[in-house]
Every structure is written in C-alpha cells, then in structure tokens.
Image 1 (cartoon, rainbow, N blue to C red):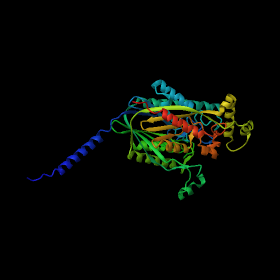
Image 2 (image 1 turned 90 degrees about the vertical axis):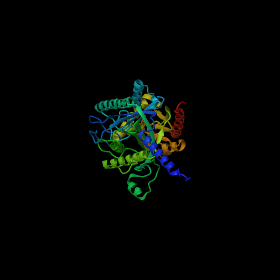
Image 3 (image 1 turned 120 degrees about the horizontal axis):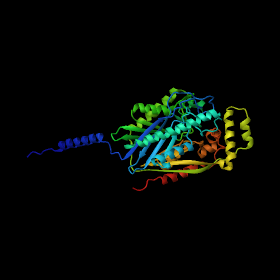
Length: 466
C-alpha cells in the first residue's frame, strides 16, 4: 500500500490558519479596556497684548501667524479612575490658574486634584499670562486690565477643552513608544556664536535628551484619535511680534495634517537649558516641527507598548528656599541705575520689595509642586518650573525607561537648576531669577529634595490592588 505524504497538506492547513487568524486580528483590534477623549479650544488673543518670554520686547503683539491652543486628553481606566492632561501654547502657567482649573473640573466631574495635569509649551510668541514672569516689566493699569481679561479667557478655554475631553470618553486602546530628534542643543555648553562650527565639526558638548516619547490613543476601530508628543527643548526658534506656537505648534499642525481626525498635543520635557538649532526664522520652526513629526511617526510605525492595568495619581508640594534677601542698596540700584533692560530690573525691584514687605522672611520660601501619574506600566512625572535636562536623565537612570518627565507643569515660577547648574551659576542657575521676580537664586540641596519627593510620590501613586 502506497504511503501518503501528509506534510504538504498539514503545511497548507497551518498556513491557512495563520492567515485567517492574522486577518481576523487586523479586522478586530484588541479589545478596548480603557476609555479616552480629547478636546481643543483656541486661546489666540482677540486684541493687542504684551508678548512674553523676552525682555527685549518693546511693544504688544497684534496679529497671529499661527493659532494658539488649549488642548486636553482625558483617560479612564477599566475601574473608572480618570485623569486629564491639559496643554497650553503659552510661555508658562501659574499655580493659581492650574488650581482654579482643577477645582472646577473636580466640582463638575469629580476628577481629583492629583489627576489634573497642566503643561505649557513655553512658546515665547505668546501673551504674558498674569502672574507669570513678574519681573519682566511693569504694566500700565490699562494693559493689566486687558491681561487680566486674557488670563480669565485662558482659564475658561482650558476648562472647556478638558470638559470636552471628559464628555467624549469612549472605548480606546493606549500604547506608547519613542524615537529621537536632534535639533535640541545644550545652550550652556555651546555658545550661540560657535554653534555652526561646533555642529559642522560634530563637537557639540553638554547633556541633552533627544527622546521623543509618544502616546497613541486609538478608538475601537483602531483609528488614531489622539496623539501626545513630548520633547525637551525650549520653544524659542522665533522672537517676532506675532502669535505662534513655535516648533511645537508646527509639529502639532503637521501631525494633524498627516493623521486627519486625530487631536495632537505637545507636552514640554525638561529642556530649560536646551535651545533649538538653527533658529530665528519661521522656516526653522517649520523644519524642527517636521523633524519632531517625523520622529513621532517613526515611533508610531515601530513597536508600540500597550498600556493596560490601572490609572493612579499623586500630587505634593515641597518647600524650597531662596538663598538670601536682596539688600535695600541692591533694590535701590535696580530701580535707579540706567542699564540695558532697565525696565526689567525696575520690575524685579518693585515685585520683590512688595513681596518682602507683605510676607517678610516667608517670601524666601516657595511651595514647589510635583505630580506623578501611573498609566499601567508607564510612569509620568510633572515638575514645576523651567527644569534643566539633568533631572530627566537622572530620574530615568534611577527609575527605568518606562518613565516620562515633564517640566513646565502646574506652576512655572522660575528656573529649576540641578545642583551642578546651581553651582555653575550663570543664567539658568542664578540671573534668570530677575525676570521671574524672585529674590535670589535657590539654596543648595534643591536637586535632592525634588528627586526624593518624586520617588515618594511615584510609590504613592502605585495603583490599588484589583
């Protein structure tokens, strides 16, 4: 009796099974165990307002080269715990604004304070926000009235964007990955005049963080509905007198063009000592935006790490101290001396003197906010202020790579130097306190306090047992 060779038949059957399973998987994406929603509201000024970010500004901005936005991403885990991230195309955000927005969202939707995160893109082509950069200049009563009205408008739009996101919650899958972009250069170690030569020679110096982490939200059909992108670099490509989101605004527009129907958000990383290169022209901002969008798309096309499990959050303040009170002579000199940017020094003296008169030695203490989120296996840390890159590099070394670290979150009160930068001094470690209206540089020990509290809050935000 002839032997029947069954191997080809079995191989064909196995191949048919694999193709069938693959087709079914493509047609039926993984079940959506989370819910997510997004929202966006324009915050472009409707009237001339003073711009922020640079002491060299001599007049208000009047027109828009690009819309400015408040955007929100809301997530809800399988047990019903929710969080809302709100991003704004502004140079900074204040604690007062963040707290008022969070309080309203807690009142209306029951979202706890620790689960409302705010982040500013740090574009310098945005309006001055009341309470931020108080040492930049003194404004007339008429200007202050308009700026107060704008701050109230921003709060309203932030709440509206978050409400839109929470009301749009629907089944979704979340996944994350990362790639790299290299236009962010350490500005402390690479003087601007030497940058072209250093770049051409491949001898750029100093720490930076080229990572571009992305969080992708897909609806039940598998379509991309929202995308969060982060990068650690100043949004200082531009310095003209038109409203513009800088490279972050260009990246968001480019990604939304490439992915119709998706809301794209940008969150600033720890880029306080990192500048874009080259800079100065709209074409440069657009090129950096495309580079960031390309990195995000490479991440999307690579291996995405799914997010399952639970959401949890924690929020806490630590007390940081300024190193000393300025003397009466220093304040008088700042008010009277004729020097470049004298309006800035006059504003600093006015703000600091008022604060010292009202609060005495308490003006040398500051409640510094730190916030942590757990999204299943992924951890987020949101640090207040303009945070130098050393923090994100250190925290990822200590806590692992499944960690995103944001600066410019909750309250952008001034620069946050590492101990190294504080000892080195210069702008990020010392003199930038003038434009922020702070009495002096920070006292030593700032880095260890922030790192210790971050570790503690991450432990606190571990999700409860199922």
